[in-house]
Image: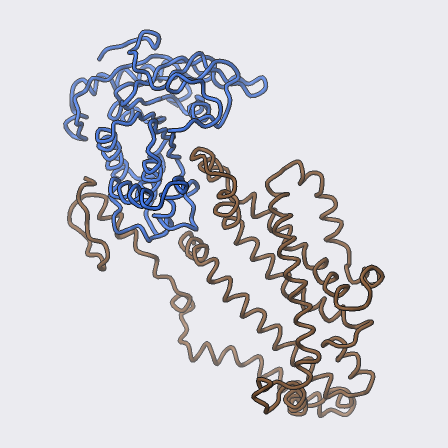
Length: 265
Length: 305
């Protein structure tokens, strides 16, 4: 486990947060967050609930503006949703369109492309998430885990450089969650996209991440940036019993506890 | 784990493998929910049950028609049906087996009702979406919408006659003006019911505005819009009759007034029969269209029950 400060991290940063803060009126939600998200890696933002993780993700995706500071995506300041960004929302049942079948949901963001390329991308994305033969179902005919796969396929179809995921597995059961974590790591390794996951689950953050950005309780700052050097491919049994995994997890847990006494209650 | 694909088209045998996919795929089958199973009645019993009340109504009608005092105004069902057949039906295939009254009164009435309905749907949905999308416009026009809605619109019939003469136009506009409100209010409501996350998803994927309108806003608001249209549909029949009670040369409302003035009670009751048939037909057509357009919605809501 190597610990680096955000300022001195590697040069291939896909996404750069520079003293980002956000306040709603007098209420300061995010104090000042500076971090680098390296290209073609999985980074995880972890923090106690209510620490402004989702706010931060909205700012990164350009859906919301920071009160001060700046987000840079591939060197350009983010102002509005940048091209090459896709997002998977926590609540699949509210982010998918229930009046479209699976293939139409996946195809919708790339409607502007020629039909042939569109069909090819949809086929590939659906195959990638393991939903072949399920294209003609409606999302509500599927279990939660499968719906979240549809949401992932929809994000993949747009060929993102940066995939943002907002608590993507918070609404599915533990077994499905483990499967979807492995799915994400396999896809990321295959396609080499940059992934930024927001979660409150410490296990998940250590298991998925190349880099963990630990946030403090609100008004949030970066408590620590941890580069996780656990070997890949990772496995739910071998990795999670790895001594280093246990160490990092304990370290993150201590960080979160010391910063957020309410979270232990 | 995702590399393995179970073939999924066949009925699913639960797998012994501990993968969650096995669980998921069992979940994934469309829910076998039909109303018949829920009600727990066989269909002959249900049909028989549905016929009880109409039969009772016919019996009461017949009893009333034979009573001393009421019999003066209430003709018996058979006479009324007989009159309905002679007026509204014919044996002429070239006229599609329809009688003079159908062409002279029923069709003009229905035409005006449908024209009014069409105007109300277009105006209600377009204005509703605009207001639903923009909180500023909603704030601006909300008072006016509630004012228009609570106005007893038949009171405006005179104004419409004054503005549009005595032909079809004032009647069509009266119908449209009176029934636009449920559609308008439901559309506003429907647009806001689509949900922030779906709107955000559209934004993140940089969906162009036209696609957002036709593929997200319209279908998302459709269940509520249809609920509004359903209310407006029954209102349109009421307004159709009201608009024909004055300054009219044809239509079912005109026929009602004329038959009453001429003490032609069989004619009067036959028009009522036509109105009942019309109401049922409107409703059936509506249900048919709604089922097609909102198949996804019925499935989705049944799933969540």
